[in-house]
Length: 119
Picture 1 (cartoon, rainbow, N blue to C red):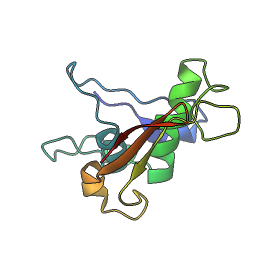
Picture 2 (picture 1 turned 135 degrees about the vertical axis):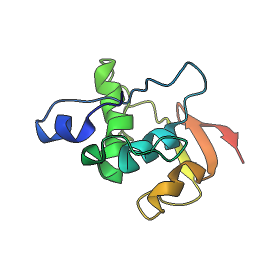
Picture 3 (picture 1 turned 45 degrees about the vertical axis):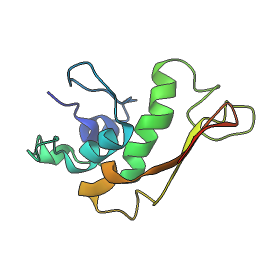
């Protein structure tokens, strides 16, 4: 089962990222890609009417997650006074082939305003 993101957004229901995938590494770019395409790792389509846009998926994975954990004043957006946790990607997911979003290389990870990983 996958979340019905389109319906939640259409009814102004706050939504955070989630997965029914078995425990293991969480891949944020795959989460965005699957919300946009509604395809799983094997390319099967699940509920095509629930597709959302890249900006909506990114908002769910950032601000939606922070809201769900009651931390929207601390994280979820790059705003003065917040933690400054973000990644720098090699290309813009808004411009990418929706089926290739998960393949975009991460160039840098910043946590608490400090570079914690660089390609």
